[in-house]
Amino acid sequence: MTATAPRPGASPIRRPFTAAALVAALVSLVFGLILAGAGPASAHAALTGSDPQDGAVVATAPEEVTLTFSEAIAVGDGSIRVLDPSSKRADTGVEPKDRSDGSTVRYGVELLPGLPDGTYTVAWQAISADSHPISGAFTFSIGAPSETTVALPSEEVGGGPVGVVYGIARYVAYAGFTLLVGGAAFVLGCWPRGASVRPMQRLVVRGWVTLTAATLVMLLLRNPYTGSGKFADAFDLDGLQAVLDTKPGAALVSRLLLLGAAALFIAVLFGTYARREDAVEKKDLTFGLAVGGGVVAAGIAATWAMSEHASTGIQAGIAMPVDVLHLLAVAAWLGGLVSLLVALYRTPDIGSDAVRRFSRVAFGSVLVLAATGIYQSWRQVGSWSALTGTRYGQLLILKVALIVVLLAVAWFSRRWTGRLTDAAPGEAAEEAPDPVAAPDDIDPERAAQLARQQAVLTATKKKRTRDADPDRSGLRRSVLAEAAIAVVLLAVTTVLTSTEPGRTEVEAQGASTAPSAPAAGPVNLSMPFDTGGRNGKGTVRIDIDPGRTGSNELHVWIDGSDGKPMDVPELKVALTLEAQEIGPLPVVPDRLAEGHWSASGVQIPMAGEWKVDVTVRTSDIDQVTIDKNVKIG
Image 1 (cartoon, rainbow, N blue to C red):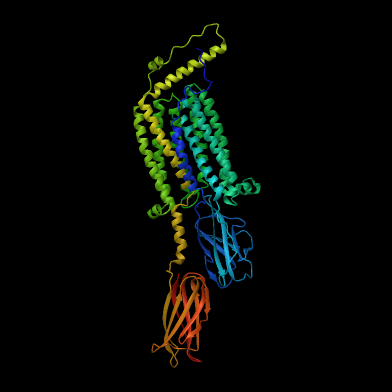
Image 2 (cartoon, rainbow, N blue to C red):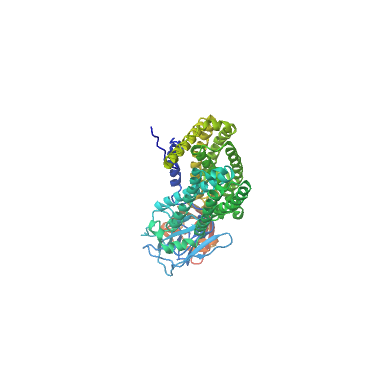
């Protein structure tokens, strides 16, 4: 019977790769996590205040509208737009002016002169210092509220299909970085012979290709992601130029340049290094590749640190190098884990020494992750309430739980590693079948075919022997479980990096709620008066309902010294917010009945401690003004 040799380069056996089924089962979960965080990004900066405030009613048109943010932002033309009730621009249309003072980040736009009364809409959009787009809108009224025809986009910036694709690209970029750096480190530090093994070469090269493609996608989508949300704008050259002038754009371009250097590193690792046989020369080349590759890997990691959460907030000078260490430790651990999984399933030659070396590398990576993770958690969360009461804190708890599970599975892997042994040279020789001698007059093509058959048979028997080892099988299963958890862990980490840190969210909430701390509710005042004339003594009672910003009903009752309703020739009321230099705002109530006056539609523009002045005249010459402070929410 004539045997047919397999194709050159074909796998010796066609055993199904059992990891594929598990990875396929995890795809929906992973992309579900990504899509959950790929909507409008909860960014580091948040709007903490404005002047006028949201919902305020001012007596006269302000000269400008200012917005205050919790962190530094990037603005441009049209970042802050003020629209009148008919949806026309009410601001001058120039770039917002920086009104920041010290640590307070504030921007303002000038308004057109002579604005009529009505409700105005302020729509704003900016880029947070950690690269995420933010947007929002609020209204204020001049004179009195009115109907408005302003139609704001229902979708926040950073959302929609573009936001989904951008979020997936961010995850793919992290995955590519992990495979590239972790796979190269595994070959160079744990299994040098793996440099000549085709599956290991494919793994690292695919990591490079994945990271490069994801970076290009993010660079092209950066303009529509932070702006229009339309895929067509990805090829807008003016928009691309604007992106290149920003910190995130510069980081993406720097990453592409560093990936060019990484391509050279890969070529040397799988070319010159794989073919080098002299021990001394190979040791020198290993040192050079380790130093050069470490610098390139750290540079790529820095492109994330310089443009995301680590680059803003407290202690940014410490946080960025810590973030670089954190990313490198993640890549060494998780990327090395995937490399080990590929080696165990796709190659029969990896020995116990390489597995043990990786076990030590993984242990060191976990120590670095623990130290840097604790610091990052403190910096981004800051309090127990933020840990449990914010989305960032809850995601962080989930991430820690996944790491604990991963470490538990890794403990079983270390136990299997301790049992792992290699076949003795004599046993390996016995396993190999006797070479098939080829007749001298055989056709050269047929001789080559027989040689390929011999190589396939040898590799097949060797792999079957390795697969029959229960310790090696147990190690494969535990490493597969680790890799599966790592896939989900990386997805959670990706969502975490696009979520507003807990510390910032809590601080922003505190700042935004501070002005409205006084409880809303009807205000009741009672003030005695004495004009000094005949029948000049009595009591003024005032009700302001509902006692909050906007339109209110005001009722005034005057009782004489005998407790009965008392009519007076004249009654005036004025409201003053001295802290903001607003007022006095005059109120002229109408007489409803004896001793009872009322005014409707009394506009209170903002919350605070207001002074209520009441002027009572009991005769042509006898009058008095009394006042009392009251908190209005």
